[in-house]
Amino acid sequence: MVRKSEMVKEIISIPEDVEVKIENNVIYAKGPKGEMTRKLVYPGVNISVENKNVVISCKEVTKREKAILGTFKAHVKNILLGVKEGYVYKLKICSSHFPMNVSISNGELIVKNFFGEKVPRKLKLKEGATVKVDGDIITVESVNKEIAGQVAADIEKLTRRTKYDRRIFQDGIYIIEKAGKELE
Figure 1 (cartoon, rainbow, N blue to C red):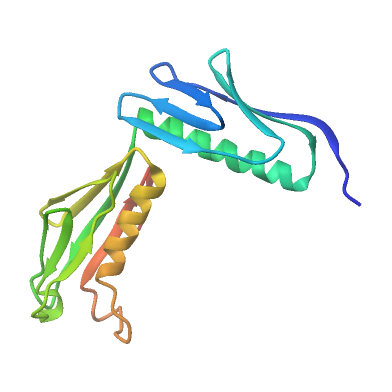
Figure 2 (cartoon, rainbow, N blue to C red):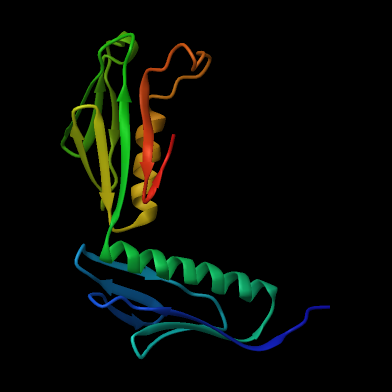
């Protein structure tokens, strides 16, 4: 038996320098770092802007609708933080056996001489993220948290090698800082 409660609202306040507009369940956000749009649709869940707040509401809430409300709230928070401050991931280039050369050209990240390989490894970068190589640090920036995280993960995966002991063969590119969190 599913219990239904009355009306549930999630309220997210909009920062000072961010503009939010909602049309047909599509959120348009504009801030100092850029613009972002996202479509959030679920039957019975309403999203609106009221008094400098984003209100996500639902009548007759079941367990599933509560989960959807929490998910939508997290997405809206990520959108607002992204257009206001942006998301930055940092990766470190580690090469002890062979000197690795990392560069960016024509929207591709190119890794040359990884473990002495003759053919360079290439990664096509996603739209919406800017990638910079500065010495042994790679910086990935975007207003979209999902795109920034995926590009960083793709770069890290580019130099992953199986069947090698990672304690000995530590060459590769590794995430050292995630959007606000520092890793060890």
